[in-house]
Image 1 (cartoon, rainbow, N blue to C red):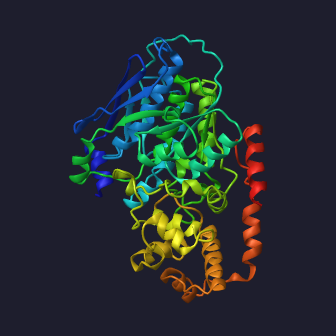
Image 2: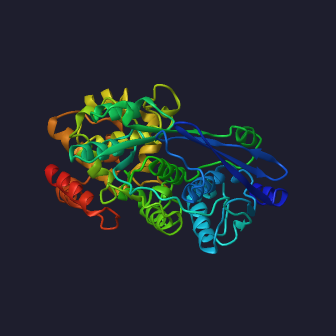
Length: 460
């Protein structure tokens, strides 16, 4: 019996016991209670900013939002034992909603199942039992929302979204979970005051860590779904109409070819569309959730981003480096290498080294990640990285540029040529095709579509 089967047999029930809401003058606090029955209890919590005088007391819409964020949070604790039954003792879930959450948990845990060698069945890996109800029953009338909430992670994608919308004259507020230096620096570089940022505080229950250390299951969860529901709460509290994400079409590509294993599932268009429909049908706040960069690939975004050079000293996308203060590029992970590669056609080797603090392209320790990124391995790195095709396009263009300039190739690019992958013959056609591509699977409202199209035309 493997761990998955063993823990499910020993701890068959996970319980979402309750959520509680407390208001202060300028914040709303939400506390959750989860348990793996017979093993552990968890009490994560959140704090959200709100305008003074705004109250959620007796507000059914907010109850639905708070409860739903708990459903997104719960998976992080459930996964330790993967209990086959989840008792939901608060809130309400219809059969359709249960199907929605089962899909999110299953596909959002695709990497978790793959890495842990778990053969999970989509229909039976978990059974939700809805046993609760909402404490209030009346809708609270609110004024029509307006303006944009732009989640900022500190990376190039959200910086590009913010820069483009601000230049187009859109009214923007920014959103982040737990402040980092790169987030503040991005907002400042966009020319916006610090008070533009609406900052939520997430307090993860660290009692999960000893369980992981003791051998209980651990791995990747769909964190971007937490961003979605928490951003929805922030937009609702602050009267904002649009939640403007910065997820690109490259996020739709599976991390493991031929399988439903996508590290970025909750950044994919499939999840974006599902969340949009969930909001309209079950949350009903009037807030519109979409990704501004969905029509574009990472290669296009990189080309657009480097035209705004003021962000080069301040942007950060490294998950390892985000855990230190101030956040840094660690220079040793696949995410750092991917960003370096996708920018390499547009910056010199010296400029790349200045951005990342080291010459990753000549670091032999990066060779394994490089092989995964260019599609010469079983799977891509389990990170938020672009498609294999656009990485190969970026590398080919970078090599050609260096050779035309008479610059010696760094180690990774020499390896690319040694493997016979460098084929510059049709690279100009591929470059133009990629730069002009526009993925029609998107939810952009017309005014945002016009803004993005003009930005694309400016660069082309």
